[in-house]
Image (cartoon, rainbow, N blue to C red; front, side, top):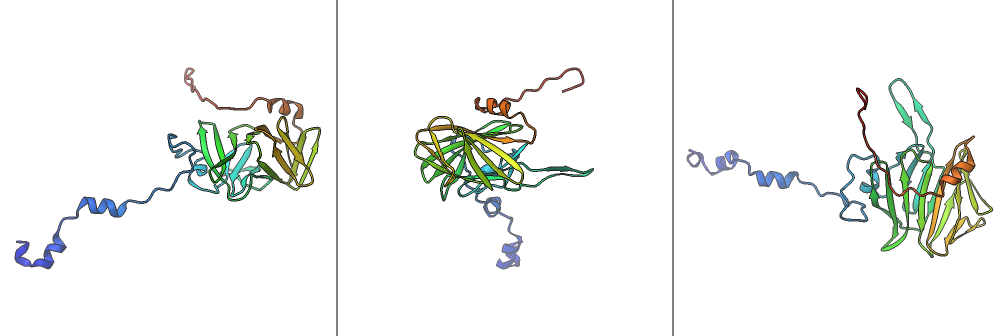
Length: 232
């Protein structure tokens, strides 16, 4: 019957080839910013933007917000505003850390509450950065020979502690071993591999306690669940 009504009708009535439709609907997946190809892509995570976009969108690890840039990263302590229908927090740049130009950040490791990034310029690893939900600390390593420039409204150094301020927010970073700082150029230079902790210091906080906590780097987190009667 199909051939009886003409060749043109064959094309109108021909069944759709599923393989052709599949090819038409397929999309090229983005190149993920993963330092380790064995890592499972972090879809539907609070930090997913770090894998899918460079520079990233802000990710919120309360009390901090964090964003990668083409130079390194920036940090904010967003003010959280709650209404009957919404909870809003706007990223407003407090401070930044620049490892150079044309810098990219790749996820090196992650778990439910923390993520570690590998900061690179080309194939050279300049350092690592770990952010954690619920933590005022950003733990960093800076590869020996790397220079990092601090961006803040005011930057000062006293007794091995760098203080950075902007928007009424205060941050501290202890130099520790293998790091020197120039207040004139606002640059930190790693003379060897340096372990550093950037601390968000809220108004009225126990600074001594925060400084003590900065000595114990977070290397990972674990979340467990327990049911107690009707409560989880």
